Amino acid sequence: MKFTRQGVAVCSAVAFLFAFLFVVSETARATSQQKRGDNFARRSRKVGELYNRNCARCHGAAGRGDTPIGKIFKAPDFTDPEWWKKNANITSTKRLALIIARGKAGMPAFGKKLTKAQIKLLVSHVRRFRK
View 1: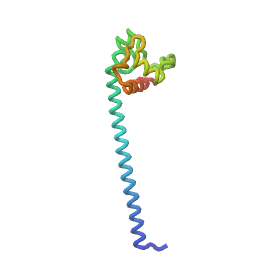
View 2: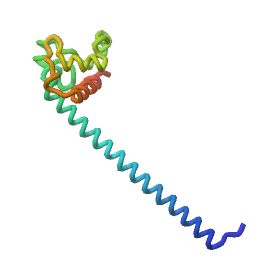
View 3: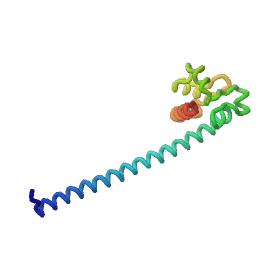
View 4: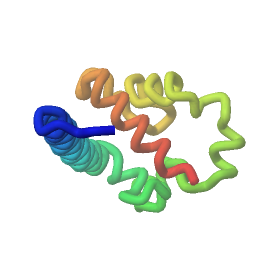
């Protein structure tokens, strides 16, 4: 097989184009991943602040319910697998959201104070305590 200068030039141009497109796509992918990571970190801080401001005084920062107020009102220990098993009827995402919105026993209702999106974030946060 004989290679001409024109054929080599075309092959080189095509190879360069593929390399260029690869670099551009990898740069875009890396930027997108970093943005997602930054958004996740921002959202995690936001939900942590939301939890600390509204829930931690009773449920504790670690979700154990071991605060003085939590002990008075018998706040559950969200880190206890047995609690999750015993209370399977109220630990669905929907039921937890309803409890946060409407309150339960000694827990006040947060439905007028928090948005539905904030309640949804809190439910996700509480579910993370379960191990």
